[in-house]
Length: 170
Picture 1 (cartoon, rainbow, N blue to C red):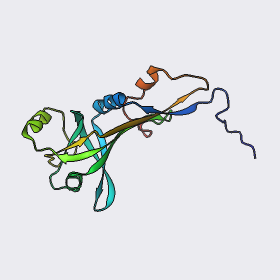
Picture 2: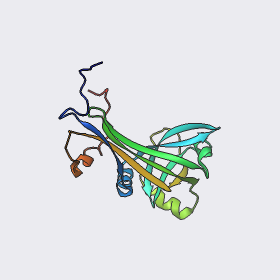
Picture 3: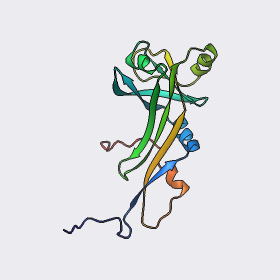
Picture 4: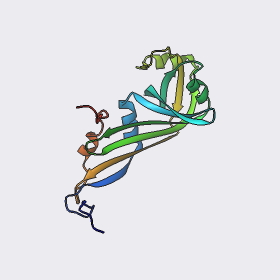
């Protein structure tokens, strides 16, 4: 069987490169964003919640509604936290994954310092329960396309830091 579709051995055809992102770059990306997703278990079922967050003192901080499913699910558990960016036109992007212990923040000095951060939830309901996720494990991956024989440059990474591109936007 033959096909007219280009293959990765064709000269000039872009090749996908999946590269690890180092911890320092992951932290820079976490600091530059403000919306991520928390993965937790609620009543023995995995669920993912979008949250507004800030990075402070090697922790992710966010606010949730007291007594909510997320508020109850995260106390003292191991959770996943993820951010990403994608360029749908070029099929490129990156993601950062954090796995860490979560807990409610009750220390008055930490609360006072954290209140100075820009933790403004987009959701309409009052969110006053502060949660911290300790950065126990931080990893990241980037997928990029290069022409055969082309090497990556530092400029390639800077192009992917922007906002997510919505393919429906015209």
